[in-house]
Length: 205
Image 1 (spheres, helix red, strand yellow):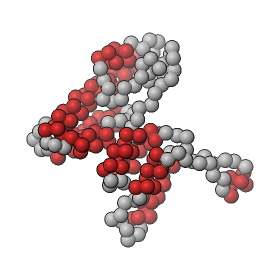
Image 2 (tube, one colour; image 1 turned 90 degrees about the vertical axis):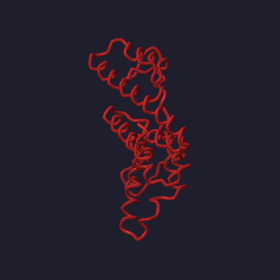
Image 3 (tube, helix red, strand yellow; image 1 turned 30 degrees about the vertical axis):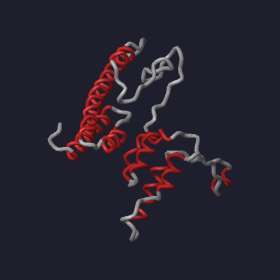
C-alpha cells in the first residue's frame, strides 16, 4: 500500500509501491542470502512469496509480474505454490474495448485466448483486423505461427506426461513456459520446454 517516509514527507509526495517492486525485493533478498551462511535456504518463505505475488497490498494484478515469472518461480521450491502462483501470474488479461481494437488487435469481441488457445478462426480474425499498417500484419502472422507451434508442442507434452504418469509435472513446466510478450521470448520458451521434457523423457520426441 501507499507509504509515506521521511523524504516523501519532506517533498510532499506519495510513494506508491506496486508489483514491479517484487523482483527488486527478491533480488535484494538473494544477495543477502549469498552473503550469509543460509544459501541452502529458500530466498523467502512461502507465506512471504504468496503475499508478494497474490496479496492485496496493491491494486495491480499478479499478471503484472508475467515478465518476471521465471525469476520469481525459480526461487520457489514448493510445487503446489508454484502451480498456485503460475495460474495467477499467467492469467490472461481481458480487453474491454468495444467496436475498436487495442495495439495487439484484440477487443471485447476478440479476446486473446492464451498461447495455447490458437484456432484457425482466431488467426483469421487477428489477420482480418482492418486499418493497420503492413508491419502489424507481418508481426501478427509471426506471433500466430509461434502460438500454433507451441500449442502442438504442449499437446505432445501432455500426451507424453499421461503415458508416463507424469502429467502433473509436465503441466507444471507448461505453466512456467506458456506465456510471454515477444516472439523471441516465446521461441526461447519453446526451446526451454523441449529441453526440459527431453531431459525428463529422453528419446520420446
